[in-house]
Picture 1: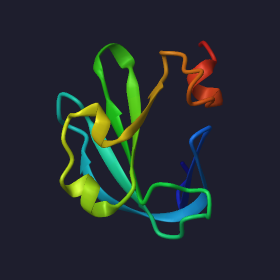
Picture 2: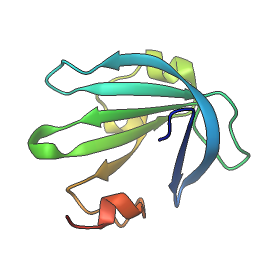
Picture 3: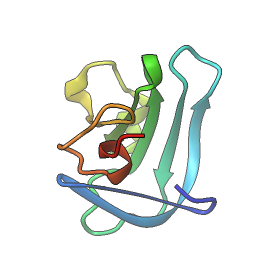
Picture 4: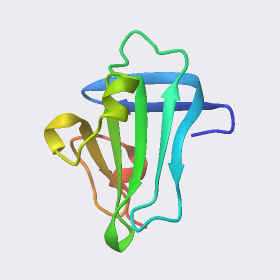
Length: 103
């Protein structure tokens, strides 16, 4: 995440650096979240929308939605999106440096 670009690399999808648009944000909720739309998806990127969701006890999750419509119709059903846990929970599945390093 940078001021003008965003990227997400995981074994199941590689979204190279792209400009983005914030399409939803609720940072005051019990589970704060921000949703970003990739404006220029790379060939290996399976997602049009990436959502970062705060969980309890400092855990976070990154969710990928194939299309913006899928995000708009989202459910809390884990089969509706791909997800990676982020700090402080290590994640071998996602292979994210910031998810596997301890503080």
